[in-house]
Picture 1 (spheres, helix red, strand yellow):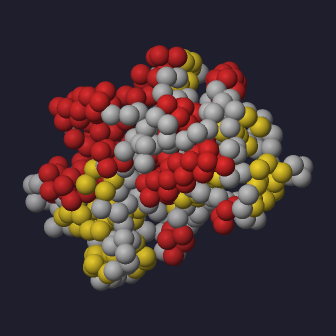
Picture 2: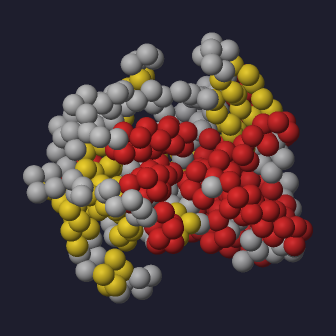
Picture 3: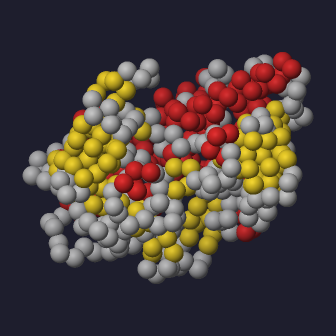
Length: 427
């Protein structure tokens, strides 16, 4: 019985483990092992809602051990340190608690087939001071760290009768969505008297974007519409602004302009995690693992890579598939079918289909586009329709993990909880 190890429990990795466990693990046809350094899963596209205090991660997280028990796979908690391709083993570091105490010693896990699904990490592009003085949103812990800094910053600024300056570097989806949610969070915190700031006068949120438009992956009309909406919320949008360096209390652009900052969040791009460079596999310039049309690595047919840590160039478009949740979802579905079937000498190629993109602009607004079967036809969306579809994206992810009935029950429970609790965390 072969052992399939999935390294990384993000959107693609957990869905793949769930699908393989249902069709192979439960029937005893293969041993499915999911490895992740955290005991719980949270959908990464919603980390900005954790950072703003809108969403409690403990309510929405998935416990890997429970998911494994229900769907016929095994879960091993530990950080992947190295992969020995000759011996076909994955080396894991010691698992420690919050106090740094060792709970589990370093271990190794043997595999017959390995799927790399690490996700991506923030790319600072070697900008001086960016890594030292900026916060990121790569994990729930980092999002919670930002939220606590934001909450304490509001309270301290209010007690000093001073302004709070927040700089977000990067005008992609993460930066735009966080900025819009922070405006709502500041107003809600003021309504509950958590701080003494005037939300419109004392809190200054700025987005610095190197390109000419925000949200460069969207239609320019939608990008301009999103920018106008952010400006209407009081957010300063500064495009065509290149960051030269980051200081502890300011961000300095290439023109020498100093933007004062009490909090700086870096959301300007991603790259592959460092562990990808330890395996002797071909990487692109962003440190992502280069894969073939069957999502196999160039050097080893028994190692696959999916999601943000991989680089798959779509043959029809000649461009790499963007690091989005929908790409990881499609790749997980493809690999689940491939790995469940009998081994073939030539695997059918993975075909990526772009269904469009949606971006939240706060609790009541969103913009996006839907792509029809004809790639040249694009449906631009905004207002209520875009907001509803944006919410359904997360429900689709939950349904892929738990099925329709459980997804519906959880959605109802979250809706009821939202009616009886504050819309943001107050502590």
